Length: 286
Image 1 (cartoon, rainbow, N blue to C red):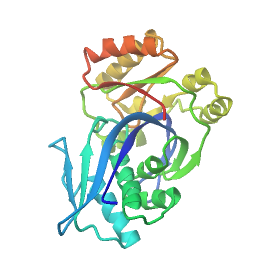
Image 2 (cartoon, rainbow, N blue to C red; image 1 turned 45 degrees about the vertical axis):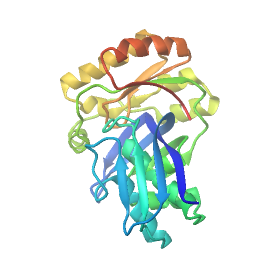
Image 3 (cartoon, rainbow, N blue to C red; image 1 turned 120 degrees about the vertical axis):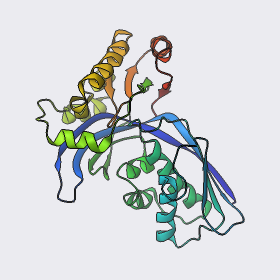
Image 4 (cartoon, rainbow, N blue to C red; image 1 turned 180 degrees about the vertical axis):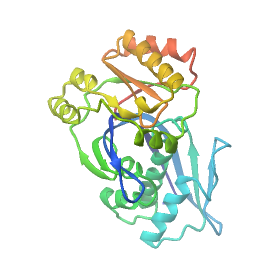
């Protein structure tokens, strides 16, 4: 085998709660995560050459030294003993960048899975997820995917019943978000509202899509600067007015997602938002 090509699925946060700061500088989190069909394509080839190389269709992304896909490859090599000489990674990007949808983490996870296939090293997904802890906090989840409760830094994973089939509309507003700044802000913010995580788990167990959507909540929305929070609320309102069962910001944002039973309704809202926000996507749960 000289080439593998596989999707790197984006994720959304059905819930996101920050429980407190840890002694190691990270935060304890509680998140219900869901994979969606919006995906990058990661292609890994073995050829001639003396080192690992990487290419991407987005010129502003970091190269081999700092790209999370290359970091994942080196972590895999450390644990497997394989040589990365002549290995080339190509990233065809579809997931928006710096959007709270795990675009980088999903690429890193796909590299771990892909190298495992390419070199036929036989690691289980659980073993690859453990490697992913060294790459980034969302990488273990992205290795496993589907619907899961993520705790700790995000690496303590519990598989959950699947989200019922639905159409998911993603919309990334045009402003940037600093994840470290949001975490600093959340440390200084008294949170009056938190996700009903137990209720979310029960609704998933019951397959109750309306109940799931009713409980979607992300504490980081409260930490956004006022103008940014207002724009996120406007996008959420557009989705809800257009028939979404629920709408929420994903991760540290700024991407907003809405869940629809009707693809036709989602398409109408997509047309409205895409006219203003180019990074708007119709997708589904994996």
